[in-house]
Image (cartoon, rainbow, N blue to C red; front, side, top):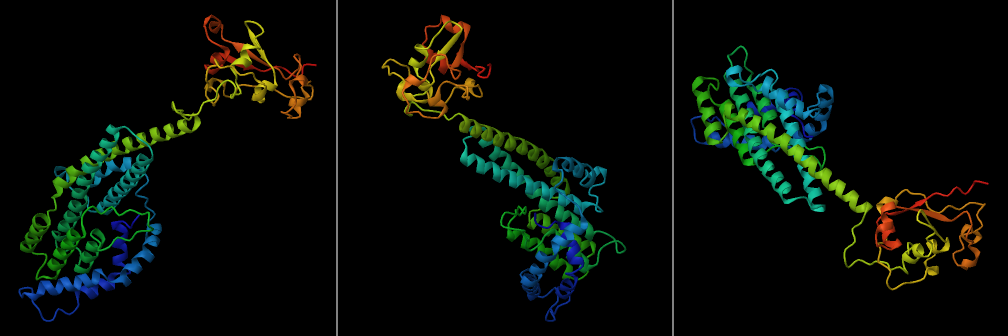
Amino acid sequence: MPPYAAELETWWLGSGYEAIKHLLTGDINDLSPQQCGFAQHLQTRLLAFDNDRTIQAQIRKTWPTIRAARGIDYDANTRKYAKCIASNIFRKPKDGGMDLNHVMDGLGYVDAMEVRRLRLLEATRNAIEIGMPSEADAQLIEELDLTATSNFKHVHAGFRSCILIEELKKDVNTRKDIPQFMALLNALVPSTVSLEDKDDTDPTPYSSGLRDSIRFSIFEHLMSEDPFSSKRQEIIEVKLCCWCDVPGYPQARDALVRYSEEFKKLENVCLRVMNELERRAVADASYPAMSADSSMLSGAETSYNSSLFANSLQDDSAVHTSNTSIDNPRFAPTSPTSPWVPLAFHPLLRGMPGRELSPASTDGAALAQDLSAPPVLSYPDNFSKTEFFQHPFARKLEMSFAEQAALGLLLPKEVDSRDF
């Protein structure tokens, strides 16, 4: 997560304060604000300040320490604070407007919400590339992202500009000094965003051109004559709201309310889509679908052979099969009319006990895992014999035993091989 506005302001008022004072008190070549080259000279100086790699390196090195010292986790509960900031910090104009004492924390919660939304959206899009969600869900995600991004642009630029304008309107006893105001500008509209790593996300929604326009308009205003006069304040409001197309506070707050609702909807849709794709992937891995062209085994190739059940039926309640025909398909007789059954076990047979082997078994070949032994070593009354339960209604169906086994109508039962 990149540094929040409150953390940047702390750095600029501490370690970066001397750099700000040098920017504001530098040589202006005896130019007055009324001369033509004044604005160009200020722009050149501001660009040099914004592109100072030494300052950028110091910010990247020290801002994590500032975050740890402040101990505020803006990303703790985004849904909870989404409602809180709209009710207590960015209040309705009739209820008092912005709470300037906590407005920097409010911006931190909003930025954390946007970073979470961008990361969740990226994870969902990566999942969509692998899976195949419904077309309605994919279209809904894109529409919610489009409207949320548009509203966040108004929130991000609108609140920051309103904070700067409100600070300029304060009286001489409560307003900030010019260096402190410049520190506030660097925190609200930084020239560059320091990212922790390549996977970090920058929540800034507008272009670098708009960012530079806002920074230069404020910097030129601070360097002009009497920047705190009412006339100059009207001029800077026109530059920000009209020239830079920044919304006012009522429009920004309405955008915040809409953005919060769209954030919740998008979060619910993204989590639902990813859960569905995950469940589908798990189901596909557990029970791989077999197409019509997939290879199937006939009665001579599958371990559960139709002749296996047809030759081993004892009575209407239990079916007994020989041991070697289960494990070794070469002992099972082939039948051209045997139905084709899939390779995988039927889901109803998962976890059911199968044939057991024990030292008391008389099937010495099976106990020794000697599959090449002739079937004469398998006796009809050994303890390794597998018995099957037949569904009562299956007796009335005109189905072979292999078909009943494939549908789960024949279930193996455990034989107690240690009842001496």
